[in-house]
Every structure is written in C-alpha cells, then in structure tokens.
Length: 232
Image (cartoon, rainbow, N blue to C red; front, top):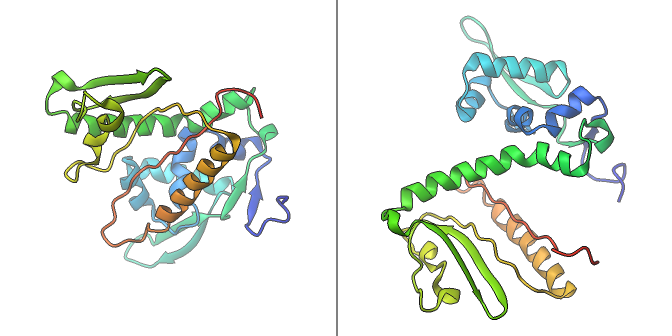
C-alpha cells in the first residue's frame, strides 16, 4: 500500500522547518496534545507543566508553520477562548526532509524524549515502591542456557530459590501499581517471532481501545522486539 492508497489522511511535510517539529522530540511534545483533538492553550500548558505564555508562544509557532488551526472560539468578557487542533490526522516526514545524518540519528532525535520520559516515570514509581533500600537494585539471572532476565526491582524477588518463576512475581501483586520493565532475551523461530510480534500488536490495540474507560488513569506503554542478528 502506498501513501496515496492509504485510507488515512497523511500530510506530507517536506519543508525542513516544519518537518523538524515532528522529527525533534523536544519540539514535538508541544504539538502532540493537539493531534486531532480540540484543545485550549491553558489546558495543554497545565498538562505539560509550562506557563500559559510559553505554551501560547509554541502554539503561535505551530500556527505559522501550518501544523495547527483554530477550530472555534468561545466569546467571553475580554479575549475570546480559542480551541486548536492539528491540521491533519496523520503526517509523513520523509527522511530527506530531516536534518538527521543517519537513520540512527533520526531515531535518537525523535525518540530520545520518550525514552527519558519513560525512565523518569519508572524512577518515580520505583522510588515509591522501594520500602527497604537494601533490596533496591539490579537483578540479573541466568541458567545453563544463558541470560534469562535483567531487571531493576524496588523489592527482593518473591523466590530466590526459583528466580525464573518468582523473580517478577512481586510486581503482579494486587496492591502494587501496574508497572512492568524487563529485558529478557528469547530464542525464537521466525514463525514464533512473527506470532509474538502480532500478539504484541493485538494486545496494544486491545487496551488502547479502552482509553475512554470511566476513571481510567494514563499509562505509557512501550513494546520492543528486535532481532539480535542481521539474518532474515
């Protein structure tokens, strides 16, 4: 399927200055809250933890670049309240429109902010759960087949006698927040690797569809599966 055949609306960004907003994680954070949602400056400012004036500066910049549009205004005493939304539901930034020297560099500039945000959230969560600092640290475990798991845990694993069964069980207790972060190498056939890839996709879609649950809390979900070797 080509971009022209896609059922979604993809706005192509060839202008390097415009493309840079989506290619750079720092700039993109001010734009993401408006993607296909009507938002007010004051609400997004509170969400991002910046002042209203700082957010208004970013919004005006996004307007001038054509990435935002005013959807409606609400009259009130003084200045009217404006609502903004992205100019398109989807965007495509060609690699050639970015300033990145390589795909690796583009990956770093585009995703580094997300990575740091995840680490910051994990740090806060682990600090809250670490009741006994003596057991807060890295747990690395393997068997005759090699490394099984490498994880940072705030508490001692439930079963040191059988870490492959109980190492992460402490995170599954009902009174522990829903947090999961673990690096686990696995050896899979191509068939099983593709099956896992599709199951991760389906799992993401399943729970993403629950975003309108009443009383739902925001979470960050990041799923990564990549072959260690270059064989195909």
